[in-house]
Image (tube, rainbow, N blue to C red; front, side, top):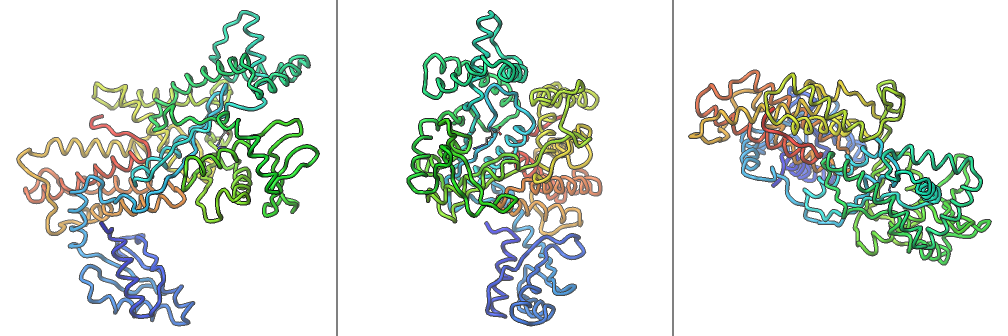
Length: 570
Ligand code: ARG
């Protein structure tokens, strides 16, 4: 099904090619205010530059060529914009199609691609922190959108379970066992710090740790067994976090760093043989002429240290090759914070030099900024420690439960507190511009006013309550015309859902979906305030109920695509 925007794009492109015998993107967008019409075309200024004509003349000529179209009315404004109003008939035809379509008018893609999404990615024997929350929430939403479009999505949780730090962690575990102490790591941060302190202050411990790394890398069974204990304890910790967050990720999606360990030596050798990497003081380095340091020198990426050890970058190169050659990915998306930008630039460039992928292969780093408190400093607990993800999730549910105890009459409060609490965390994260640092603010995210999950879930609950009161002997039906501008504005917004979802796949600006669903809920509230829905003639009631139904489904589907659940009561 063609959306209204796509319809306008097609008739506008056709009119441009008939009048100017050229193809140019008609650049259709929504207008900022209803008085300017429903959509706007901004191409005349650009075309004027290339064909050396006046933009107003161009806009007028194209408007004239569209005069016969019964679905749109156009007029020229300002320096050459074309304002476009659509007919009620077109709007109603669209609404009827959406009403009848379980996918709300969004067609599955006609070019299915296998897409690897690398996200969440916590580390073994370390607490998860808010950075891992951002990666998990953004990555999960990307997977949900791509899956809804029926792409073949492969989720990959690239857990950090390998590296030199495991030498000290294992030695520390051994020491604890010797002392007869409980070796269940309840507090990962304390365990990690204690191991690090021993390494820094006790030379004998440091020597043992270095030896232990070599034993681990050479596959010594006893060392692997101890390493496995650390891994198992971390996995059971992740299993307390993931279900709370309602992510798509399962244990089957874990392909940790250690998985690639057997491939690292070959990866390095291949790059050396291809002359992409070379020895430098016994270390192996990839020279990247296109990527410069601040002082203008070519960047080098170390892929093997002089002691023979491999690095984070080596693992990422092996993983990339595995994803392309073995998983047969057509596209790869990495979701991590923006401090890893240079790392991924170098990894992607190396993969292109090695011709594992060509220059046009879609591979992208979807990056995000830090999570900070309202004081613009890293999030801390009241006692001054960095806040862990577990504390954050518990607090979200606790705060939502308190809020509901003042507001709600439902006896399902614990479930609703989870939906509202976790939904608030996710929504406020996703609705922020992910390129910027994000200021974490409990009061704001849990408010029932403004662009928040509680506001949206509340709008959904309100519609459900209206639908429950709708007489059973009636059936919803869009009327032949609109009786109020509030109906029309809401209807127009409902028809824009497909455009928003399709546009969100370019660069994954998920905040656009958040903005859309917020505007949709606002328009519903305006209708609700200004127009009776149940207390009017049956014809009008059926028409408004049909609009409410589409709105509720669209809110639910939008929230589902960003990983937020709804409830029918509150
Ligand atoms: N474990 C890493 C961290 O906590 C993130 C891994 C990102 N993914 C990757 N393929 N390098 O920073």
